[in-house]
Image (cartoon, rainbow, N blue to C red; front, side, top):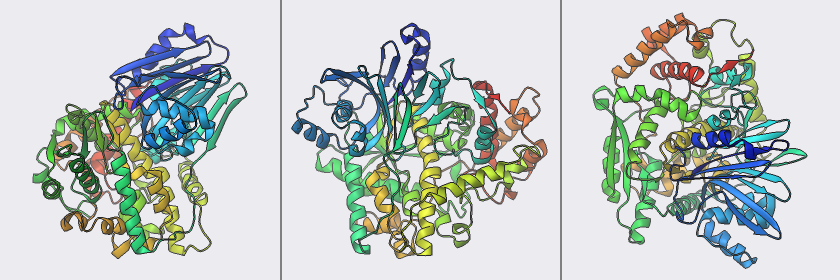
Length: 612
C-alpha cells in the first residue's frame, strides 16, 4: 500500500516545478513512510510514497520498463491477489521479470493487454502508467473502490492523487466549494455522491473505472459494474460456494513479506476471517495469528443495549480468540483522546467524516502500527449479504429514500432556514439515479428487484463511506488493511443471489452463517449483528457539547454562516429526543456534535472558500 500522485501539463515544463511536486509528495508521507520516488519529464511528474509490504528490496517506484522501443512507468497503490497466476501467464507470453513485486506484474499486464488489463486484476488498487513515446497517461481504480484516486482536470492538463490534500498542494487547484459541495457536506455527508470530491472541480474515479489522458483529452470507461444475471445455484450449492469464495479470498490476502494481524470484534465477519487466517497459518507452520479489538474507557459501566447494538463485544471476542488460539490484544481508547483526535481524523479524510467512529479507528490503527504493518478486516459483509436492519424492516425496505438517512429533518434542524433551498431535490435525485441505473431481470420478484436496488444503494454509497474511513484512518498511520469480503467475485455472486438464499433461515447474512456453521462456535454464528463499537461514556458527549458551544459563540467560525444555534442547542439539551440517526446506526447526538467540530476545523484548516 502506498500513496501516489501525478501532474500532466501539455504546455508547462514540469521540471521547473520542483517545489510544488516536492510538496505534493510530502503530503502523502503518512501513506508511504518507508520510501519515496519522483520521476519528472517535461510534461509529466509521477510521485510515489511507499509502504513496503511485498518484496521490500526490489519494489521501488516509479518503476519503468522498456518494451518494443516504448518506455512505460508505473506508480501503484494497492495489493494484487492473483499475482502468481498473472506472472505465469505473462511469462508464457514471453515477458520476463526482475523482481518479486506485484507492481511489476501490474505494469507488465498493462504493457501486454493495454487498457483491458484491469479486467484481469484481482486486488485493491489505484495506479497510473505513463508511456513516454506516445505521451499517454493511463489511470485505473479497483472494481470495488477500496483504494482512492482523485483528480482535477483543467484546460491544459490534469493533476491526480490518492488524497485530496495532495491535489490542494498544487496552486492550480483552489479550495473552493459551491452549492453542490455544500449539499454533499450538510445533506449527504459523511457519504459522498460517487465520483465527487466535494471541492469544486475535484473528481474521483469511480469503482471499476479507468481513464486515458492524451493530447486529445480525457476518456473514461467503466470496466466493472453490478450486472444482473440468473443465479443458478440452489441454497445448498450457494452455501458451499460462499464458503469457497470467502476462504479463497482470505487466504489470497494473507500473502505478505511482513507480519500480519486480523481485526476481531467477536462478530460473524471478523470471526470468519480470523478463523480462516488461523487455520492457514497452522497449515503452513507459521504459528498463531494475532488479533486486535477496540473498546473505550469505562464503556462497560455505561453500555446500554439498543436495537442496533444489543450486546457488548467482549464475551464474544474471548470465545473466538480461545477457539482459534490467537494472541489477542485489546486496545482501550481514552475518551479525551477520542475527542482530541476528531480534528486529526478530519485531516486524514480531508473531509468531515463519521466523527468519533473515524477518530477511534485512527487511534486504534495507530496503536496496532506499533507492532504490525498489514491486517485483514471484515468490512462490507453487511452491505453484500443483507446484514443491516434496513434490509429486514419492511417499512424501511420499501421507503423511497436512502435507508441510512431516511429523513433530512435532523439535518435541517441545525441549519439556518432557507439554506440550500433545493437540497431535498438534490438528495432525492441522487437516490433516484442509483435505483434507476440498477440492473434487474424480468424474472425478479418484487422483493428481489428491490433487494437489487438496496444492494446498489449500499454498494455505491454506504459501503464506500466505510471503505473511505478504513483507508484514510489506517493509511494515516502507515497501516495497510485488506478487506477480503470485497473480492469482486464475491460481490458479483452476492448481487445475483435471491433474497430467500441470502437470508437463509430468516437471518441477516443467513447464507454466510450457514457457510461457516460447523467451523465457528455456535454463539458466534448465532450472534445478532452488532456494529463497530462506540463510546457510551457521558464524558465524551460533555466534551463535544462544550466545544460546539465554543464554536457557536465564536464570531470568526466559518460554520456559523450556515448553522442554527437554537437547533444545535436543542440537541445538546435533549440528545435522547433524536428519533432518527444522522447517518446509519452509529451517528446520533454525540456524533452530530462531533461532526460540527470536524466541520469547523475543516473549513479553517483547508481555507475553504464558499462560492455561491
